[in-house]
Amino acid sequence: MTFDESLAESVRTFQALATIRPAIDRANELILATLRRGGKLLICGNGGSAAEAAHFATELVGRYAKTRRSLPAIALSSDGSLLSCIGNDFGYDEVFSRQIAGLAQLGDLVVVLTSSGNSGNIVAALHEAKQRGLESIAFLGRGGGKAKGLATCDLIMPGQRGASAQEAHLFLIHHFCEQIDAAFPA
Image (cartoon, rainbow, N blue to C red; front, side):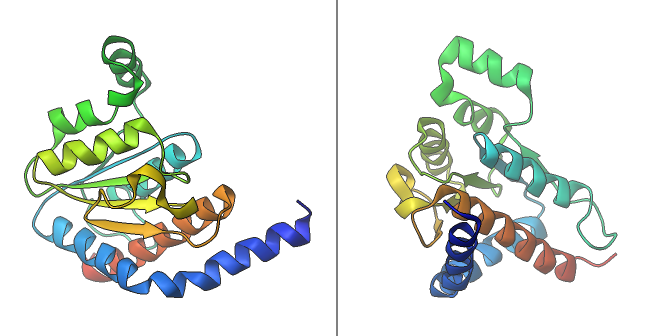
């Protein structure tokens, strides 16, 4: 794909985000309600989506654009020792669901990021969240894959390109951080 083709695809994806605005607003409500009641975000993804999960958690626990109180969030994909332990002892499909089982409390929010929607560990994480009575948000791409319909709120990025989905995921993370900064005073 040429630079111009790649740029055009990314721009189309960003412009098409307006078509999922109700889901974006719903996700924002879920995030703010969770944080206001003292719940935490349990965020996970694989590969580039793992980096986005860590980025989102960092913006909450640290800060985004302004100094405000630290907010509770954990990137479940950031502890290599824990991931390798669970992967070795229980299988890679359980690396996130097992952490949700051990760390989640009622009132927490599970947030998954995947450009395909077909990762077994993401699907298992959403099932675990539902089994524990937790709400969840799924940042998805390429039509949503197997994860579509498993979360409380699906954010399915328009288009079929994984890179554009990940770019839109990061844009939405920053959008949600703007809303969080506005909702929580310094």
